[in-house]
Image 1 (cartoon, rainbow, N blue to C red):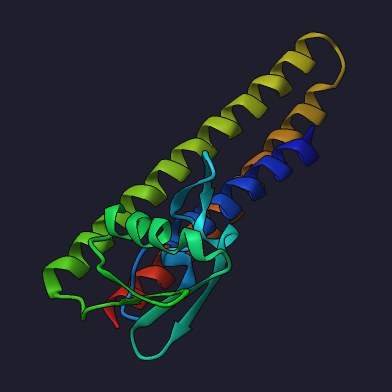
Image 2: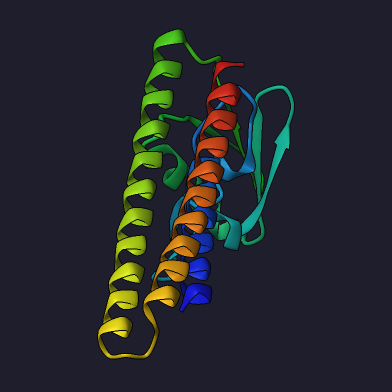
Length: 180
């Protein structure tokens, strides 16, 4: 029971980490565009499945597309994403130059990251509440004793606090990256 909650909590952290990786900072990151969906042979696939995404410092991303017929599709997908980027095509490579972030844009990104972190904290609390209900149910069905109930609830809370701390740490790290 506790192991299942622990696994769910870890999945929440990993999903949060993956989601904020795609949020832009002044440092280019392949995570910014690699999960943008491309309609490729009738299927919606991430860019990373049709080409290799790389970073060229200081602020350039490039996608080396494996199938030359998909270059236009990749370019169009990046352009129509909500990131406001203008890709340039050079042979089988799609280049994206990232402009310097303005103060207002940084503040928007910070607000957005905080909103996402709150959504994951809510998901974690919901998962914790479900785990606690399961502990109560097991007590009612005499599967565990009163002492075991308190021990399990304490363990659940410890895991919750640890995961909340991880989310907070990732949030602070991302805010610092955005402000650079």
